Length: 352
Image (cartoon, rainbow, N blue to C red; front, side):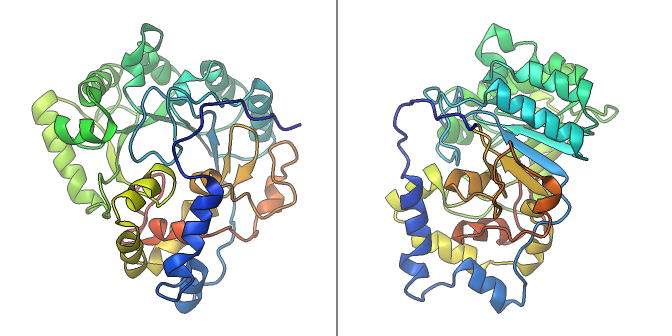
């Protein structure tokens, strides 16, 4: 039985139904811009379908110690939605019974979940999963003494840490994420480096994520990675493995920002005009299923936030048969332009 949502403070973002209404109408209904599925047909790309499923992405809760301006999850300290232990156990069962190569744990700040460490430990003990990714905002490591040892915990369980860092200087980072975020992020990165993360001779992977601060596409990933590495090392002796550039999708808080700043139409025109058919070949939604805190299944984390469940009668973790999802049509809408514009975008950076 699916858990009933916990009562929470009303989100400041547009309701999901309103977001979908905006994305499906206006410039996309009056003929000014083509719908995403029409763009696929224009470029002779067949309907996007699921392939072999290798990645299980789990959003285990929306609670976060930060309230970032671009957050597509609308996460924050007042969000109380958390994946129950029952759902976590079903996810473990799914990993045991299927060949899942990667488990990608996200939030909110997933480390704030009361069963986070129990869950990670059991993935390592009971499953054959090769890679466990934890998407950390970095500042959680410095938020409370009970989190200070997270870098050691991550290292002991061979966690691949993917961390958000908007920029390599204080001004741009704090403008996007809040006062003091950059300083705490640097302290957290130092602790991760001390634990062995990001070092040239270490197999403990530490990757950083860059999201644009405004209504524009990210710059070239390779060039920006070089700049990040130079500045973070020269200024703070920080080391990391890779930088991932991720395009901001027009949903949730970023959609609010686009509308409030009157940049929505221009941004969508940019995404459509920069559509790259080659990016569709490596879309993460083709080999991933995304599970929300209640146990519902989606093609990706962004569809999850828009309530677009997988195209299947069995759309919960409780009755999911992974092999039955292969070749299923992927649910799309106009936000998908964000993943196929320019060099493409996924949870692990550029794809084309």
